[in-house]
Image (cartoon, rainbow, N blue to C red; front, side, top):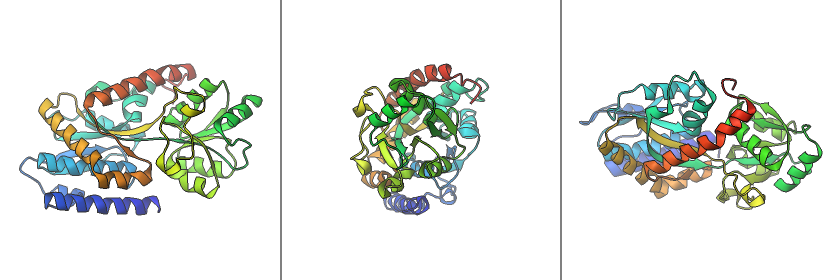
Amino acid sequence: MTDDAAFKAISRRLLLNAFVATGSASLSAAAFGQGASGGTTKLIVPYATGGTADLVARAAGDRIAQKLGAPVVPDYRPGGNLVIGAQAAAAAPPDGRTLFLGTGTSQCLNPLLRSDLPYRADQFAPVAMLTENSYLFVVPPSSPARSLKEFVDYARQKPGQLNYGSFGVGNITHLGTEWLCQMAGISMQNVPYRAGTQADLDLLGGRLDFLMTTFSILPHVKSGAARALAVSMPERFALLAETPTVAEQGYPDYDVRGWFALFAPTGTPAPLLKSLNEACNLAMADASVREAFAPQGLVPVGGAPDLLAKQIAAENARWAPIIERLGLRDKA
């Protein structure tokens, strides 16, 4: 199934759930905008419509609308490496009418990488972790390595001669690969790309030796056009259960994950934050949502706001020294 087809199928499923549960209209912005006695809540999504972030936003927005008894309108603000959307959310009044779909990039990496960022991480109150996703480490089929250990041994024989792709300087795929290189005692050349799809294509074409990428490459792994060596989270991925984790292969502390989480402007009333958290947990526990997310590599999480805060603190502690070592502050 293509990404577009998957999006349409999941959107239809979420739409049906919302209609059955509320007897009301759809999750589209037009239907949300028809108003309710409690007023409209705006959910800022720092991506374009139609992608994975949109799926997560719609799943959370459905339950929030039910919980609050008021419409939730997705407000798409792509661009600027998530800065445009985050800046708009940070500047919003803390009245419960504005929410933000944040990520590790918007809440951790951007503040660590840029001193001129037009928002601060402390302008956001954590509501709930929504989803997590692992990354795949892959090599082309021409590579002599059939395991992470074999690749590390191969790279040690060719210090600085191999390359790896990343989705841009300072991106999590850049930092995550450099962290692995640091742990393994190897050195490779980073080839940054503006689009992950182009990095995938160059890996498939044998122009890259190594790539940390998303599960969009899974069909190519299944077909044999790429070889998966490891997944980045400590847990194996159900759709690729035969591929071990990095942690299983000699690096027990390695844990890199992408995530989507819900935030509100700091100062949003505590009772409202509690209701929002409950709505998010209901959404992530919904069997149909979990089933719909699985093919996208998304693992629903949920949990209390302090769990999200701890995740952010842990990532800041992990990435700050790597960013400093690579000299990326205000250069990424």
